[in-house]
Length: 289
Ligand code: GUN
Image (cartoon, protein in one colour):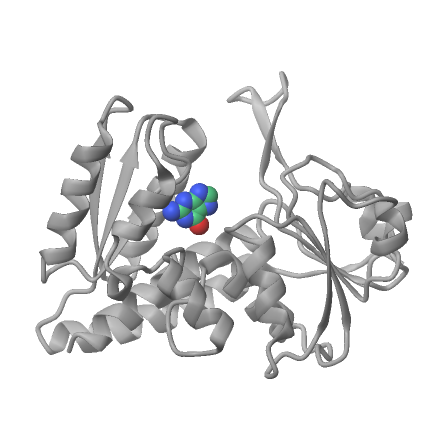
């Protein structure tokens, strides 16, 4: 039997609607929630993400301050820009789109952001607060996955979750969130050093693919009835597509026949990332009122 498709788009719209209502309350008090989005260079995927964020902010009655920089911007210039945004009381959140041009030290830039405005949840202070279970910003994609898992109402406590990927943006923080007491899952983290990946994935009640490798997870790697969350957003060349590529997840779509629940690409995890970003910007703005 084919899997139940988890409609991330529908769940994300509910969260965006809630953000819109909270933004309206803030506006009545004279505060317009504002996110500064900084993009250096013209990477096509980054441009498309940044546009999606601006549109979502506008629809929620929030301000998006788009800052576009040349790929040749120096690290010093970028750090000075961030210092200005940190001191700007009208700006509640700062998002620097990654990846940055190679001559810029990403860690230095992330660390320069005021933790009170770190709506990406990437600053070491935010990561530390998350690991310690203290209040703070949760990173958007991991938080979005958690919300989707809660939405389908399968028991998470005691579930064996297998995470494929250990990036700073998804795998590492999500593995951590899932082991928190309020979620209580057991987590195996697989990565490029893992031997015999299929032996692990077949154990998963919940299988999360965040490796950035198109169709890495084949149907035979999925336990029948498992929940499969596909975080992959890979652009693969496709001559029949208008723009020359199509989006492909980390999970082979044929796995739909084995899974109990599965997220589609696009329309699964992707829209949740933007929704949780709006949620964080509202949280940042409310903290200042
Ligand atoms: N690049 C890919 N995903 C993200 C994200 O969630 N935030 C930022 N800032 N850059 C990204």
